[in-house]
Amino acid sequence: MSIKLNLGSHNKDIGNEYINIDALDLPNVDLECDLNIIPFNFKVKKKNKLDTPDWDFLFEDNLSGRAGFILKNNFADEIVMEEVLEHISFRNTVPVLKEMFRILKVGGKLRIQVPDCEAAMRAYIEKRICTCVSHKALVSDPFLAFKAKPNCPICKGRAVMDPERFLYSFTGAQKHKYDTHLAIFTKEIMTAKLRAAGMTEYKFTDNPIKLKVEIIK
Image (cartoon, rainbow, N blue to C red):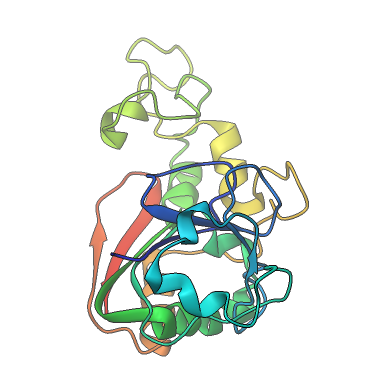
C-alpha cells in the first residue's frame, strides 16, 4: 500500500488514499498534529484509514491511540502540504522541511503550495488589484480563474488579484487560531529554504498567485 499524507488538511479531503493530518480535531482528520513542533508528534483520531500492515507499528504500544508517536524514517511515499507552510513560523521553515524529508521515502514526492507574495507585491505596485477579480477560483485553470473583467471601469481589465486575496497572502484569513501567516514566500525565498533543508531536486509549476513546487527525495 502506498502511504500518502495530507499535512494541514483542515476540513478538506484530497482523496480517500490520503491520511488527513491537522492540529484541529475536525471530523475528517485521521491524525492530530501541531506541525510547528519538531519532530512531528501524532495522535490517532480515527483508525479506519490506518488499519493496514504499514501502520501496525503505531498500535503495538499504543492501542488506545492517546499517546503521541513519531513516524519512522523513509515512511511516506507522498506528502502534500497545501496552504500550510506559511502558517508555520519562518524560524521553523527549514526544520519542518527537514522533518518532512526525513519521513519521505527515497524517490517519494513532496508537494508544497503557498501564496506567492512576490506576485502579490508586484500586483500592488502595478495597481493590478481589483474587486472584479474572483477571490476563489471558479475554474480549474488558474490563469483563467483570476482574470479581471474586460469591461471593468476601475482596472480596465488589467487586474490579476482581488483586494482580499492580496491581504490574505500576507496575513492569512484568521478564521481560527492557526489561520495566521507566520512566514512569507517568494520563489527566491522558497528555493533558498529548500536548499537549506538539503533538497536539490525540485520543480516549480507556473501559477499566477501561488507558488507550487514538487520535490523528489
